[in-house]
Amino acid sequence: MSTKLTLTIDQDVIDLAKTYAKENKRSLSNIIEEYLKSLTRQEKRSGKAEWSKLVMDLKGSVKDPAPSKSYKEILTDALIEKHL
Image (cartoon, rainbow, N blue to C red; front, side):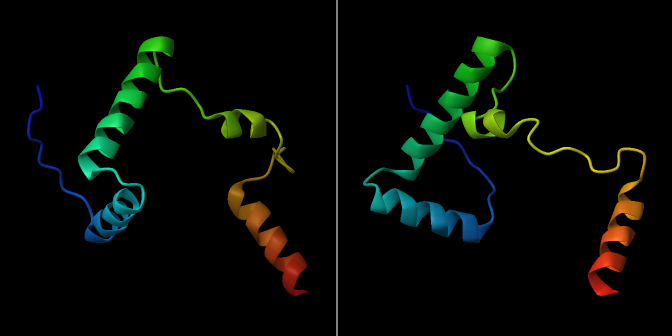
């Protein structure tokens, strides 16, 4: 049984989503429904949302260059190196 749902979404996002739906010959409702189904399926399987394969492949590939420094110190060092 389908039930009506009201969502508040930024107009630019709605416009882009409608264009995407039209280009793929699908309704916006169908796209949103399938997306929500995929989210709930993932959470049921693992107890939480699963990371995408791309994110999992990238996990650990970037190391903190200076774990003892704060973000501000790293940024300051980078700016000094860039501009001096």
